[in-house]
Image 1: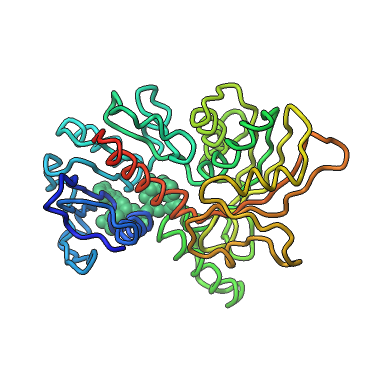
Image 2: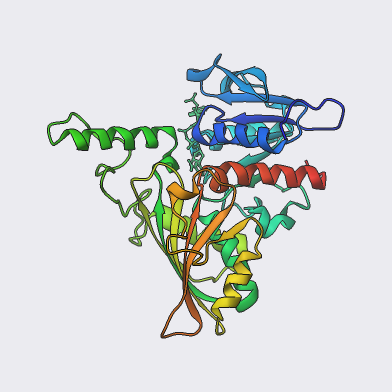
Length: 349
Ligand SMILES: NC(=O)c1ccc[n+]([C@@H]2O[C@H](COP(=O)([O-])OP(=O)(O)OC[C@H]3O[C@@H](n4cnc5c(N)ncnc54)[C@H](OP(=O)(O)O)[C@@H]3O)[C@@H](O)[C@H]2O)c1
């Protein structure tokens, strides 16, 4: 299915802020693939990209600088241009009457802003939010919340311990470019001229157990986001989830190692059934010895991939699993487009 302006029906006018970035570009692909209905499409970025031409569904669009864009021309605006851009421009967009779907941390914990993963809490979209904003959660939180929902509903969660293995594309195009440069420099040897800007120490042939800044608690902001956002999405304000977030030298797709202790004993076969029945989840369950998901195997995918499902030997209520999800699609652009689809379906724009 491909999307194109739909002038016959009451299709919304759509704008994408950050259209030239990793998330924005992926969003354009997903809008084309899924045939999201729009009557007008506006592509917005910084003045650096103003005038650039991008093709969407066979039509050419000129990128507009945010300072020049009239937000009154859009009914729904996707923001993926960084937190400071959202803090400044989202209020302008909502004041002009648009509903905003925001990919940054700026409004996620605002009580008047729903934090939505459509497979988990689409009911939050039944009415237009007081703030005019719907927040898209953190890229590692989205796939985790989707699995925890099914586990909570069946067994109740006592606590979860998560380690993430996050790809360089979590920092956008510049993250992937830096991983490539850093790898080339490492292969050239110690005299190579390379100074990391984003990943410190350099990410090539390395793993970095720090994403975003350290908090006084010793956790990082990324780890705190995963705790607070998971609680808000699941509507479980006391849920015990503790996380270590690690950057790994992978271009795209985040992975997570997840240990869950439930309120009641968990039968492994039933767990596999419960996970496989969740929407847009693929379970890889020992079909062959190599049948576990990895970023390179999963590639660009609209499914949350789950494998290595193991009952623990000493605790019948506990188990481990491994998940892999495309952070640019599931963790950002796809989730945002699915929110827009739900809004259109509910006529709450
Ligand atoms: N990457 C992920 O996996 C992921 C997941 C979830 C959420 N997010 C969030 O999504 C946002 C974008 O991430 P990304 O990975 O797409 O980054 P990116 O590849 O660096 O793209 C950034 C985009 O923002 C635009 N931009 C930058 N400064 C701007 C300004 N002052 N005014 C208007 N537009 C501006 C850029 O436009 P120019 O081309 O003009 O510079 C570009 O289109 C970030 O807030 C990020 O935290 C990312």
